[in-house]
Length: 549
Image (cartoon, rainbow, N blue to C red; front, side, top):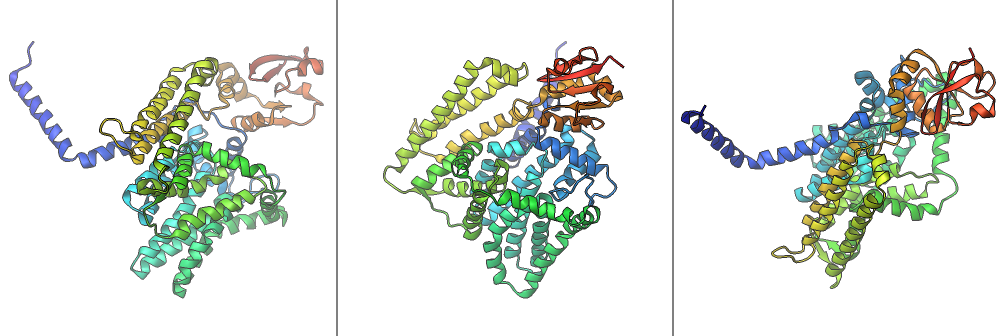
């Protein structure tokens, strides 16, 4: 049956109307589609391929659940004095209460905080530089491997970074505001988030706050007494949760409940200086911030920025002073540096947006170094997926196609980006286009790697073991005892199996119905073959069932 001519004409009219509407509003529609796609990469997660990372995620998850189930969230629910303020677990505990015990609930605070950090960082960049640099800083920050990893990690790191960024944003707003009432409000909010950052991250909050001291004190010095008063009032009101936490800790544990917090800070910050930090930190920096870190390193040496930035104490002194403090600490981990990434992305955006070459050979040197780096990494990636097929299949959990597609996508973006460094046809040297051509595919690929469990999913087998129908029926109706279990797996099992019990000594093990152990020789070592039989194996662990009862 043929379609009537009137229907065809009507459909064509609708098509014309839609096309005209899109063309007239493309300035709004295209950015909206891009933003929507950008946001979707945060939430398009296959949670069947997600597992917690031990120790940290397992510890935060277990402690947050204890707080969620307690009657007083200011009072530590732990047996012994705790070395962190309870704000470290509040958001995870709240998410558990709202969404239940799942990887989504545990990681949702970091996912949302990361997204809000990007918006806040962009707003800060708009106040310091121009819109083009602000956009570059946003894409730079969102594409860094360290940022992507901790945006999907159950920890207080991203909420803490958000607090520090809000301190800066509200303080800048107070400087730009023309009305006294608005300035008072912004200064109050800035001081408020200073204290909240300590409640969330304990002693670690001192590092960025000390870095901000020169900028904040310099600006407050020029203000009247009333402005300083509102700033201090914000600090006072923001410290109420911390004070309540310390009060209840004192009530429960005595003075040890307070000193433990500062003893832990002293242990982490003061000690024998490790010279390896001076070597490993720069290497980790280049790896975990690629390509931003290495491109910034090249640009600093061979170019100079033509943009005059506002607030140099904030742009340069704050990250430099904070970095020096971190390098001087006796204990340092990559996630300690996350709060510096927004500053790094802003400095990078400042250099790449408008620059001039320092030397006559700078342009050719930038080209050659960029070419070598991209070709080297492309070769490493291709060599890895070709020569380590077994590992690709193992870590993609039998679905290597996604690895091959995304690695090819990254390598292709590296190779095609070279056209912006060398004069090919009508294209000329353009570092901004070169940057976008690399960074957007990297953001998409790394996000999908994490979302589908290729990265950030080290305990997938443990989770599969727990989801096995036979095992699930056992653990849901019995108490599982953990004996001689690897400490990391023990941390995870303590979360996934809240009714489990840890056995410290071997005596009396034969009276327990079900035991999980990492010691595969346990049955032979203690002559228990007639008492226990293996029910299920996972990795290097055994679930044993007592048949001698």
